[in-house]
Length: 281
Image (cartoon, rainbow, N blue to C red):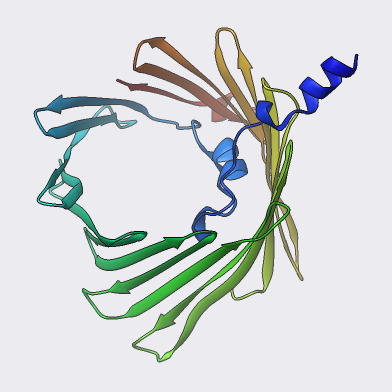
């Protein structure tokens, strides 16, 4: 009995949640459980190495039946990483590059409809970011996270409008991880609301999560859901405050080939049913 009890309570059976992350990823574990793999589209993503270049072709079928694709590549040259060089059927283009000039420091550029110059720095239990809109020179933003003892992480972010010469946003947050429990609280809309995300790992196969938002005027249940790792695949399900029920099945049907089938419906109204099917290889 004591052996079984010690094995069940052992931290090794629980998913590893990084103690230090970017502020934007402070509640990543529960939000990923509640938001990922619930698509309502049909898509195929194929990844293939072509010499030093990793090529990705992402094809999506719209509800009208029209098919559109995005073709991208990823490679490194002379210490410079081209993290994404992508062309879209609509004519859109995306370029993301990065370089690490010093240990723990990464300087990046992301260009699409806009253009941002970013900097990420990590040292020990500290992670900091900074980003400048270099296209319109309209905004500069930064964030910081610090990992403390006993599984506690604290952080905050701020955005400053260069055009209005005032802060356009600022928020704080904290997370706590202990054994099977993970909880994160972050503020929104300049500290006027609080978002609470909680995840509990019942056992190695079952995890549950919830997400709520609280302000002076209202309290909202964004979603409650769970993940069950069955022998035939990973099963996810969730329900939101407006009564929308969603579920998905994720299965690796062959080495490096993953199929995700999902569906959602508002209550018991079958006319609102939507489905999605995604294949990644």
